Image (cartoon, rainbow, N blue to C red):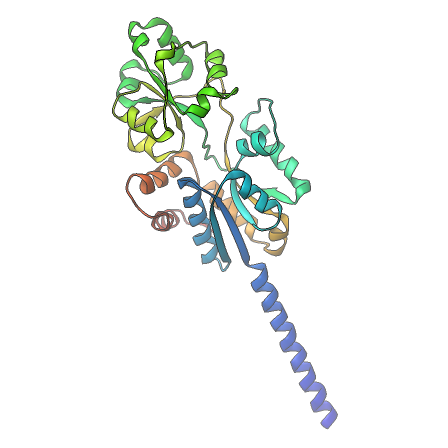
Length: 303
């Protein structure tokens, strides 16, 4: 009787130990360290992702405010489990790809290159945070210009074109894959007095105030919508695609079987328009990313 009681007691202890180990393992598996870069869109994406995953039982730690290369290094070194990155950044900055690729080709290329590194690119969102040439809404409406090719035709044929000023940041104006090849691609020409180098943020304000007729903008910037700026269709596909994609360490996916499907659902809910609205809410309306993320998750039911 004594022996049976002892065995039963030991079995109970073993069962408790197994349960504790399982609980500990589960808690460990649900720990996600999320990295993010140092601009509005990334703060918002990190907040949306963290709130969503926490609501599904994950323990999420957010480390934001990093430059692209530092964030990437932390992901490769295992300090981060998950980041939102952009196909164009991976191709041009991390992998040094110089050939022209369409969005699907670029996504597949960076996905394949990262697989041996233990990094998994999940489904790409339609959110494409790339460059665009933006016009003030009134100029776009009166001229009927919708594409960069149409802008090039306007500049060649319209008498008022000699007064058009093109504003951009100094980096784009001077880098080898920036202004000059853009003008060559579309057959555009500007006199030196028509090209104005300025702080990127001031480009939006100058377009809004009709001090510029053309400005270099980012397609998902909240000020595009907030200031009524019209981004032109890059019909010759000069600008590389920068689709936002959740990039996850394979070990984190292995430990969390539902994580890939959950992040893919979130990715599918993102678009340029949705991101513009969220960026505008932060940059122009003064709302904190936490509040903007809450509103997004209320409006987009996710699994």
